[in-house]
Image 1 (cartoon, rainbow, N blue to C red):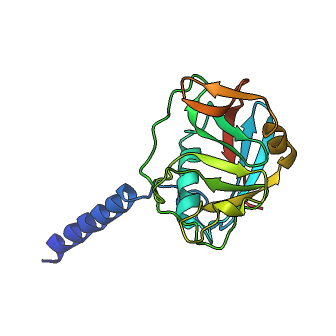
Image 2: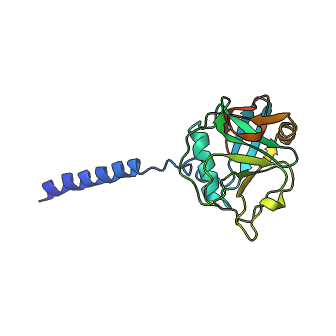
Image 3: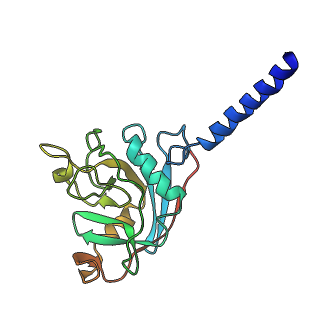
Length: 202
């Protein structure tokens, strides 16, 4: 009986470990899982920006963002919407204005206590509150109108810690109406995200 039982227990243990490997998360939560404030370096054609994310207050949003970073899904996308004194938005289109594929929409964490202040990073979305997926924006002003109130706001999930001047310069570039996007406020000269890197913990 013992001879039969031992191989059986070994097989069950191996099966359990295989299941654990298969069940390993790939949703961004596996990126520096013990770090509540991961930092991401964003290399652009106008200079480098470093953001510190707040996983404690916006875990869903931060993990979603890190998932795109981990998959290198932001590389070669542009900042396609720039409104001076308001926002610098990007992450969704190539320089040819082709839309990039996205992971499922996420829950809106706008009620996390973080507000759309100058030099914060937040998620863009459609009219429905829970439609954010890959596009994000930098606030280039204190945009209290984007905070939750009677309606859902826009979820802030971090702050710029290096390169504020780069984002300020982006907010002042010349823009035009784009037929491809059917939208105003599109930079004439594309501002491209070349690379995003999760930096080592401090």
